[in-house]
Every structure is written in C-alpha cells, then in structure tokens.
Length: 274
Image (cartoon, rainbow, N blue to C red):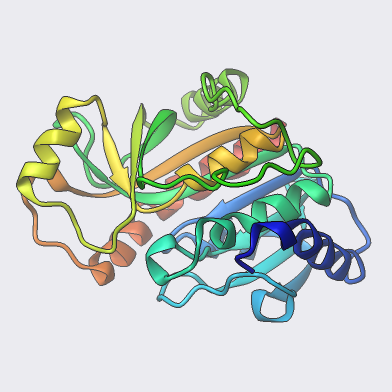
C-alpha cells in the first residue's frame, strides 16, 4: 500500500473491485468515527463490503471501527458510508489511511462528510455537544501529499484555505436549527496519537486556536481537497481534555452513544438537504 509510485494502481484496483459489487454511483460519502457506526442502520437497499475484501484498503484494528463500506440509500440519496476508519497511530502510512478517500473520489464522490469523536479544549464546548468543523490545524507532523505528485489526483500545491465548505456548513446549521440541536462550531486540531494530551499540550493547543482535538480527519481532509471534493466535518465531543478528565477509549465509545440521537438526526437531515 505504501510506495507512492504504486498508489495510482492501488486506487484503480480498489475502485474496480467496488464497482463490480455495486449498481449505483453515489456522489455523497460519509466517514463514521469512533462509536458512530450505527448510522448504517438507517441505510436502505444496502450492500456491505468489508474492508478486508477490498484490495489495498486499510483495516481498522481498534473497537468502534467496524471496517465496512456500506453502499445504499440514506434519505433517498445514494451514499457510500465508511463504517470506521484506520488511523495513522495503528502503524499505517499517511498514504494508507487516506487511500479510501482517493478511492471514493475515483468512484465519483463529490461531497465528503467526515465525522469523528474528539475532546473539547474550550469551556463552552462540552461532552455531548456536536461541533461543526470550520477549520483544522495539522499537528500530525506529516502530510499525505509529501512525495511525488500524481497529477491524475490533483495539483502539486493545494490551497487549504476554506477546506470546510461554507455552503455545507450552512446546511448543517439550518438542519440543527430546525431540529433543535445545539451545535457548536470550531477549529479541530489533528494529532497523531495514540496518547491523550498532557496538560502542557492542552495549554498549547488552546493558545494556538484549537477548540477540539482528535486523532483523525485532517489527513482525509487534505486528500479530499487535493481530489477536489467538498468537505463537511462534524465532531462528536466525548470529553473535555481541558479539565484533565480521566479518559480511555472505552469511555469515548460510551459517550459517543450518549450523543447518538442528535448525531443521527443531524447527519440524516444534512444528507436529505444535499
């Protein structure tokens, strides 16, 4: 999966395998973060393809990421739903964790909704809130575009200003208002993990303008921009790192379930209005 000179071949191989399994060509895709995979229960006429069966696809190795590509209808729209993701901290390269986004683009996706579970860095964003991502800070100290550029995918230099599409964010805000969901909006800091942050790191993240922090999303957003996709990011806030709260991955999954009804309502409403 890793050698950049072969990434185009791997994307084509993965896309061809998926095309052979489906009869639709969705323009919308959703990546579901930790503990959020239950959204696929709302997908009808669905075809489930396990990541293990897709050539070159990275397979998640942690709980809360089922590892299925679900294809079907959500709110009368054809969709691809990634039920879980692989992470950089699992030992995959940046090329590996972002290959699914390349494949989705190759399959014709134009809109990518990226979701995650994240920790709050601000007093006014609490566990149980949903946060629309308005921008991100890349603290992976790595970038999936490093190396030779394949012009078939996108340009050498990518302008990341405005990465999180304002029109899609407005759709999310309108749905939230209509459904009575109190959503926040803020900057997401992406870090490599798998450690949770020290107190000094929490202070640093707050000082540089981050509102929430997590271990995903940023590499996917970079590759999505490189591929010309429109991006909407939604964070499910599962804890407050600012309050030095004791945390574990199990707690993250439990708290993701507590905000589940609002998350499900918001995502379904967004897809319905696309």
